[in-house]
Length: 363
Image (cartoon, rainbow, N blue to C red; front, top):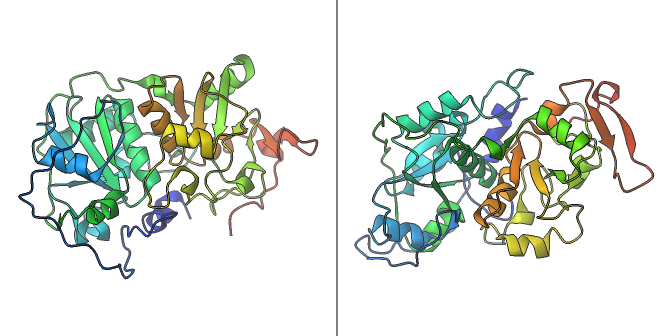
């Protein structure tokens, strides 16, 4: 079963929260009464590179109380066609359009298309189809925090200069007392993105670059954003990946996620994403990298890795990127060097992909 199928599970399985995603029919807790839609919400301004924002800030944008935010788009991120996304159809932020993860990421999953970002021209086409240019203020949210981060990363890579995420998603919006609507909204097509896409290729690391820098750049750190069992090579984490291990030379982020569907280490109990200071204290206490290193985050196929990238990006760091192909692309090439086990221990095995056993798919 490829990622295209299990992504529907990601839409309904949220770590540390009970966010209801695409296709979910779970019973919801009683929701707070919506505030009057005529209320005029004020909120402090935030920096352009601030990614994770509060419901009150989003509402203040809607109410016209954020300077220079007249041209904005709010979008719910899902996987697949809008008609199949229950969370959007059951109630979304007023005025929100729907965007599909497949508008930034290929959906094939083979050697030529290993779930990496789409070609730049395709991403630009989809953005323009929603009326999004480099100057559009984009506010995203979605049932899957990793999928939403993936979309935000793709937009930043393309060149959208101001990308925000509603921290805590639709549940935080409702908890703040704001109402939802069920109308299907669409953007108005734009003609000119305003800059050559991708405007920020430096945020994207290829497999070839990762291999070269691991071998030749002592300041480069390839950071695994994977569960401990994935990190140690006990499981691939996915039922369509039969080999387990990590690229030789990779370091670990300390085990924030418990499995490929869980980012709780990067989240508060209420489902909001932590800031960099909290991550440094809670998760990156004893790791083999620092923020002075050039960091390329990776996971299985690129979704989880986008969260620490965004956390560092909004804190002003430009020495960060996402190794997009992750373990999936790495294991498609028999000659790639692999470590199996903790490289700090004497039990770590160094081998190649072609020599790995093929019994490590997640059950």
